[in-house]
Image (cartoon, rainbow, N blue to C red; front, side, top):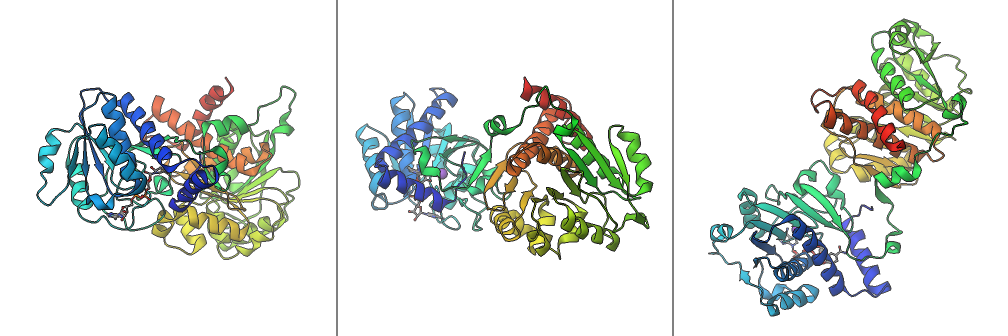
Length: 505
Ligand SMILES: NC(=O)C1=CN([C@@H]2O[C@H](COP(=O)(O)OP(=O)(O)OC[C@H]3O[C@@H](n4cnc5c(N)ncnc54)[C@H](O)[C@@H]3O)[C@@H](O)[C@H]2O)[C@H](O)CC1
Ligand SMILES: [K+]
């Protein structure tokens, strides 16, 4: 399933209409009917529907929904918020059809009594503004949206909750519709995945309206779905041996922080790594070894409890991860820079490793093997010299610019983790929950990703599947054994057992 900007969606509509010859009125008919079909499954016949329509094609969809629901036996009313002469083109055509089918159309005016309308309404359908919305809501949209948000009735939005933008734009208003359900037309828009706007959508579903599959070929952004996982997750051959599942090397930890490297390693092993070696300071080894009998160790030279620069033979390893629990001392900065230069295999840099490369980003471009960075928004802000709020408002474009500029794979972690390739292709992972928002989650993710990187031919598949599995495990654990308060990274690692069992059954 693709993810689009408003501009891209308009282009896809244009291609469908001009190059494939599908009439815009038919597209609108399909949109309204597809949503009406969902509504029929959701509502009982005695629920009275009021559709709020604006001047654009989103309103046009509203007129089709009105006619279709009326025909299905529902009591329907449409409130038009704009003057008659503002409704044109395909929307005007469907307005006329609604009227000729005997539909009830009310017109907004200054003295319109919304309270009275509410008394005759069980469900609001918001077809006021879609991808054409610009800036803060103007009157009377702002008043109507405020009223609907205060009303206790079920609210269903068409394509986008009115008042929020499609893209990574500011200009949102508090009054934007807080939908219970949004039926998104054909493809989620960027705002579906932005912290600032995601909650306005409520629960969302995508409806198809007849856009040909080949019209999407220029869109390089999509959701990593269950189906994507089924198509790309490698199966294990009966004849495989430990060497076939990858030799991984985890570099990190320090005298005072041995825990995170233990989590990463445990996650890597549980995710199926064939062999795993931990490179850390001698002082950290006993406590890690006590938790992990399956790992082997490479005692690294340390200074003041931190790993220092040293000769390191990385040739036996299929993938390397560096950074967790390593600390920010100058000693560890040099070993990080050294590994960036000398790892002739896929390298994942996380946590303190990201801190150390912030002033050496150009060295990433010189690597001849894949490099993966896994920042959370704070680390992304540091790497890209932006504020955290700017990263949260523009995670998709900032990730893309950064990944392309430095030639890296970027995993920007968050409620919707974004995976970007050096070519600027992007995937959004939907698994995971609030239980992951705590220390240790990122360490466990890095371990899962390390293993996936050793077992997939394509790094993007490895990263997307790794994010999916990690989030899926958290979802499973919160559904069956834990809450999103008490979930720990160790629980997520343990939950992988169930996820692998389900995927292979
Ligand atoms: N394939 C598809 O996706 C299809 C989508 N359809 C639907 O059409 C809308 C987009 O329609 P468009 O006419 O371009 O824009 P809108 O309906 O969102 O509204 C534009 C309209 O609203 C006024 N306006 C803009 N901003 C504001 C504001 N802040 N306050 C008040 N008024 C505002 C502006 O002046 C315009 O008049 C898409 O979302 C789908 O729902 C088609 O039905 C079929 C194909
Ligand atoms: K809408």
